[in-house]
Length: 158
Image (tube, rainbow, N blue to C red; front, side):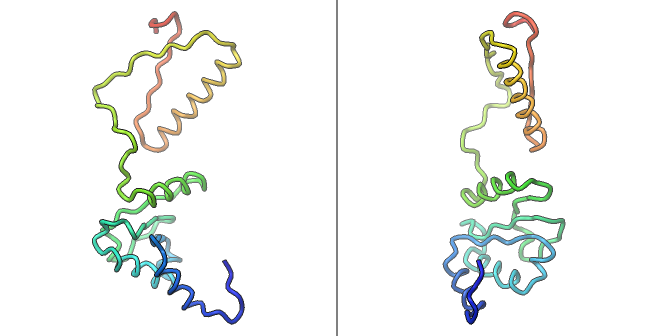
């Protein structure tokens, strides 16, 4: 957002920081070394010094060592993520600072029951296989546990 000629940048920044529900502290050399970045994140820190309310949302966009006061804060790691994944991760962090799962995770020893898929056309099968492969790779890239079991014969015969 550009400011019109004659406006006061510092006053506008002050008003914006005071109204903000959360402050995003960008961990990059450019942001952390800038006078503007250095003035923004301490306001969020001061509003929530313990981090319990999640008002300061640090995110790392480049390899960098955060300043002393931010070293104890857990950051959203966006290094290496594409735009869509980075946006999703940042929005998720802003909604729930704890990152608690929406659904209760399954007990680690629990084995899911087999799901049988009715016979389908080769076109449908290939589309399902492509979706399964994509989901599997997404899980692997995100560090989640991922597994794929295939059946080559009648239901239950693998």
